[in-house]
Length: 91
Image 1 (tube, helix red, strand yellow):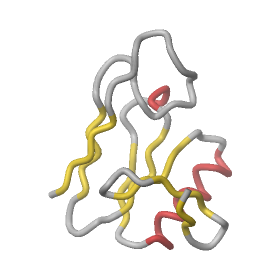
Image 2 (cartoon, one colour):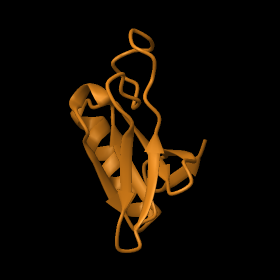
Image 3 (spheres, helix red, strand yellow):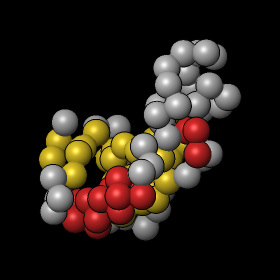
Image 4 (cartoon, one colour):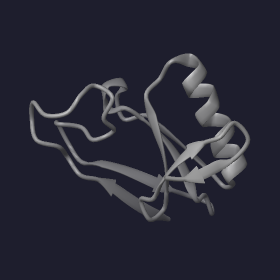
C-alpha cells in the first residue's frame, strides 16, 4: 500500500476549496494497485476515492465537478491532474 500525505496547512490560511486541512495531515491510501485519487476539499471532511486508471479517475472527477464539489486529482507521487472530459491531463 502506498500512502501520500497532504501536509496540514496553517490555521486561518487558504480557502474552503483547499484539499489541505488546518486540523491535521491527510493521508491518501492507495490500495490494490490504485494510482490516482480524487480528493475532495478538506471542508467536506477526509473524503477521497482511489482509482486504477486515468479514465476512471476522470469519470469520478467529472462526477464531483457536476455535483459542485471542489476537488483535486493526484497520483501516488502527488502530481496533480485535470480532467478534460475523457481522461486526465497533467497540470
